[in-house]
Image 1 (cartoon, rainbow, N blue to C red):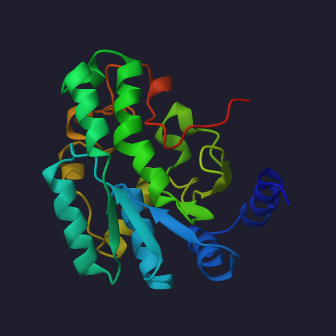
Image 2 (tube, helix red, strand yellow):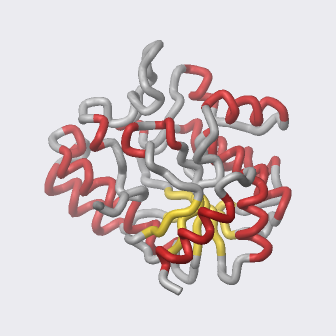
Image 3 (cartoon, rainbow, N blue to C red):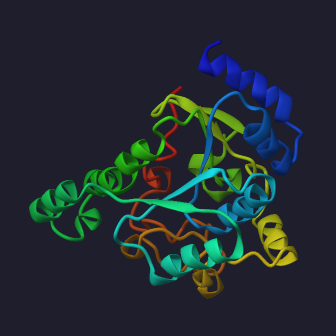
Length: 238
């Protein structure tokens, strides 16, 4: 069965399923290894709670780009103290980072989309490929209404970059649903969320948003909305 055919069948199966039901299938019944890639965002913390309840031995990983907020590092530690899970940390190749910075500058991402994408590729995309070694499917926390680049997200997709299945259990959830779940189960979350940061990644590329702005307006705010992806969630061109 081809990847896309499998995805079509899984989407038909899980179109009306809850996030927990989707996760339970991929952790308990799926014939392959399923990993969870977390950026420690609010949605990912919800998924961490669900995964910890279902199978705390699930392979969980995060990417330390070297430019994260102090609050994010604190949350990694707090999450592992709250739940019986291990968050495996993957770092970028030091030589590639040094070469890039020495050639283009420490804050090259402000200069052009191309340089920002280069930085994201070295600090995020390449380390993620190591994390995906031996993995058949990965769970992530993206939602349709986070940005215009994610409106077509399905519960199950085919990740062309890594040739594995991509699972988006909370793809139809609203921001309100995410926070209701966090409050209901007292889930630890990044304290920057309380200071106007709905979407958090590298410190130089993230700012607080203003009232009424899109939830991802604080990410790469100097770029057009359609460009605001690091490459981990790149969609196949139709």
